Length: 375
Image (cartoon, rainbow, N blue to C red; front, side, top):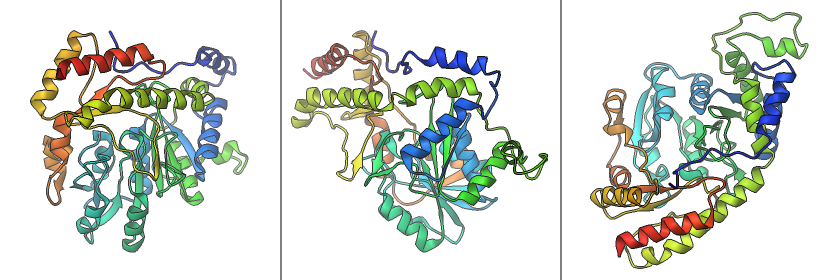
């Protein structure tokens, strides 16, 4: 069986976890957590980066830092994971979904401004498949309307837009280090913060509303409860697992990009014949091969192809069900404008196996099976 995903592993993870245990500091903000934070800052250019227990909680932290209050509106795509929406719903926001682009599957930047109202507070671009949204246009809209931009860069580690790391362009960026991502700590994430003052506020919220971080740096002689907050700190053992992969980030990235190119080369003939559509990467974007997907002709065709691949011991999966058509989406939000592409793309997109360690033989089998299906 060729699995859809295999969590990345470099070989040093066990050694580093043992080091974390030997350090007798396995709770949050230990030595490995700090190393991961520094790596993200140095490799993205963001002012501050803080590991969290998940990308979900990074988004929740961003919603708090954005001062979301009940009744505020948040503009986002419907074609995304529920965490993108939940983070703002939990603060009482109303969701305003807009359509996505047919090429990148990202939020259509040309539709955002028409969805802005006096209640709009935040725009949440989601960088689908590690391909950057049209951030210049989005940041221009945000500046002119006084809005906050929270980048959902869960899939965007090591990807960029016009040379700028995804997650570092908006006011806040959120990474995921879930086991399905390019770099993993099992469950985990990070928030990237552009404003240093907001970074200090994030430290307090992340430390259960206390100024413990300032205490550990010797800035205060004791720490106390100073604000609302929660526990967003991952175990240092999780951070140790992640650090082993961040040290090999370029190697992992190049391997995935190699696999991505193999898929494209082997399936190009089907796109040339008008049978499938393959991913589009805009010139201004450098992607990270987070996924390779194909677009089938219909939902029924995709369903048959999934079953055919399963019989060939190949695991391929569809992706998001549009949020606006879900029970919670109807309750907490509305779709602004026409759903021209969101539902259609959700019905036809199929994700192929993609992970660090995928072999050329595996890719040949996947692509050969897809060609056999259409023959």
